[in-house]
Length: 262
Ligand SMILES: Cc1cc2nc3c(=O)[nH]c(=O)nc-3n(C[C@H](O)[C@H](O)[C@H](O)COP(=O)(O)OP(=O)(O)OC[C@H]3O[C@@H](n4cnc5c(N)ncnc54)[C@H](O)[C@@H]3O)c2cc1C
Image (cartoon, rainbow, N blue to C red; front, side):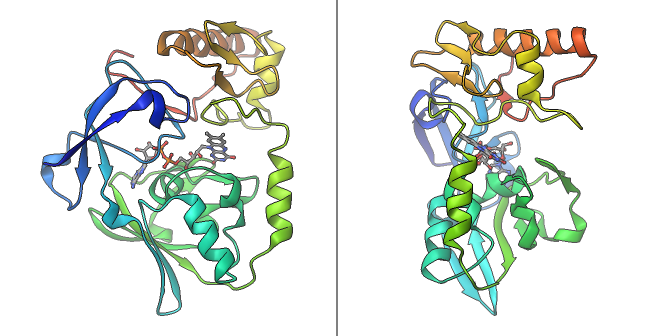
């Protein structure tokens, strides 16, 4: 099994995590069954003792048009997808100009901005368990029930790349901090906003060590440089406990926490 040494304090968008050997998935095999698949770690908080990790090989980094369908390998970064769509005048992927991740992570999370989600133009996915049509997948807001590594996804091909939409997505981002984070940390509970609740319980701008619920946007848990996993966990627990006590609402993490002792 090939492996690659990754320093997660540099690789992950939160800038937290140890250096670890990560297995490279080139072909589906039962050897990888006890490994957790990562993409580009824009939605992960890596602890000091995470499970065994694996990453798709470069073989899955491609984008092409075949039989009138857009086919994208799961290791393809969002920036590359957006550039391809711009160059070939393809619509519906403009939101990826301002959304970090690789295709596999984007599909698994049903990532998006407002009503623009990756599932909107999805046709099917190819996984280590075969092809699954969109209709066979349960999905919703930042949720899918996909339980096998995604290798490729096919999308409807619609022409008409919109530079206006790119400008609109850039504007939507303007109130968000540029300090390292994993984007929104908690999912918005139905009919409310996680950021509003965190602010209401007095945690907007709360800093422990180098970790802070950003003073710019309370639902962004940002790292000012040398943030520690333990400090992040302290703040997460504090937010969940206070919001439960004051509002009776369970704040659910959108970011996945990878730590065996958590
Ligand atoms: C500044 C910032 C802003 C963000 N804004 C948004 C936003 O507006 N909207 C939004 O939806 N998200 C947002 N995010 C979160 C993030 O961009 C998305 O969740 C993205 O889909 C993560 O992709 P990734 O490759 O980094 O996945 P990772 O973070 O590496 O993994 C995320 C999950 O996907 C699974 N996964 C990864 N690859 C595969 C695969 N091939 N097959 C099956 N499962 C896989 C992992 O097991 C994990 O559970 C933001 C993040 C940052 C840092």
